[in-house]
Image (cartoon, rainbow, N blue to C red):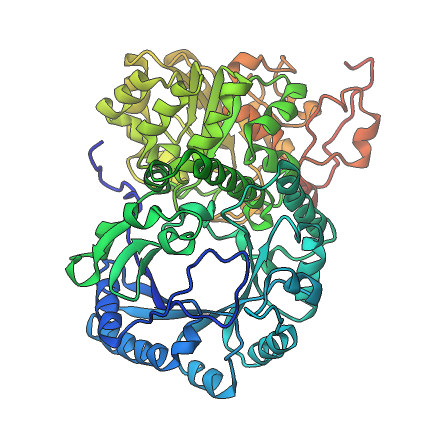
Length: 633
């Protein structure tokens, strides 16, 4: 697809983070660590080459991660790396940050005082209470250093240095995960990253226990900001996209080192070259899907079972954290339904069966094309195709026929064609995409999508002419692009569903829009309420009162999602035909957190009516709500 004026550019694939293997030595011999113990450390010359490699990225901001072994055993090397990195970054006009992964035993006041004067963050390895730490973390002699580790952790907490705690859960410690998270919170730790033991076969019951312990933690009302997993994109960790420079200057994808004991052949498969001979670090980018194919090809059949087992656990955690991240949900969204929609396909099928919806949904993260009045421009990373593929793969067992691809703007995903191919591979016969519609004005792009298997599109129009529509979506030219997109879609023989959001800014033009869509374009059409959320202008300036709706829209026939007592005063048909609304928009209606005030409890249609938003009641009250009696119905 050619780039058009105003088009959002797909995310550039920078490699702006680099791990440095300072040393293989470590005081501890944790039995879940799969890094070999070798008598090798990095030289200053190799470190300089590694830093120059990192700074070859196009990204203006970079992160250098000191790793091991225990990097603080090479404290002079760490200090040299910070000094040299800062100097070289200034020369390159870039910003550099540093991270040190440590067991903490060598942290002292002198080191903390030094680090405070630089942009350094500490990743402190610590698994929770004494009993849990002593299951896996000990010296070669078998002795533990829990008291010393805790003492150093408290020193770090009080240092005002940026840090987080890395906790590793294993099948042996999973039963106390919730208790250990609470223990860490009581220590006044601000942030924790949850990891799990890789390189072993996790029993299915133990995987489920990880999720249940996290649910238990959330149910108790603990703050989701505490767990970094809600916002990072590291899963599955076996397919880490980090790049690592070894002590000898050789460059690898980092699982070659951190999983070397269990996957010894991976070092050969993941080798990328020597630091001084790689021109640009961005050339080393590999997607999780790429890494998956390389990794599994280096495995024996036994090793492959471990790989797939660990990836499955990682994806379960990824799905869980995406589903329950509270800041990802607008205040009016039904958190239970949204969590299911962002979860796996099995949960969706169970949930949607009672709503008589046969489609399943694939939510794609990514930026938005427009900047609508009733929304807020969204940025963000695109969903990883590897994760999306493994979700789709579940359909080989479920055997659903229709999939709806939804998100801020799914068509912006740089691998949208590959994704549509995968929907057919895993058994979907019909594919609907929710889109703003502008990108379909590229005829070739539109035709390619339909030929690949897209059967219909669900898209919005906010008015019948550009002078009204374009200011609402915040982008000049939108209306003409959408109309051309509709023509291209019809030419490609795919279906179209059109919807609109009713706001003050298009209220007086809504009858003309309905006529335009239904009679001129001859398309199915529904009018939906605007939901309260983070918007470009206040909700009070967006939402019309029901009195205004009744006055302006009398005789219209496309309302859906409004209180039925209001709908009845506007149109003759109380319940809309399900064929008028796309499955994507059915989810939009179902996912709202509507509210029924006390006056609705006596209504004949209370179980069929969606209700209204609490925010509407705040601005307008419930005086316009008129319950149906059985006679009225």
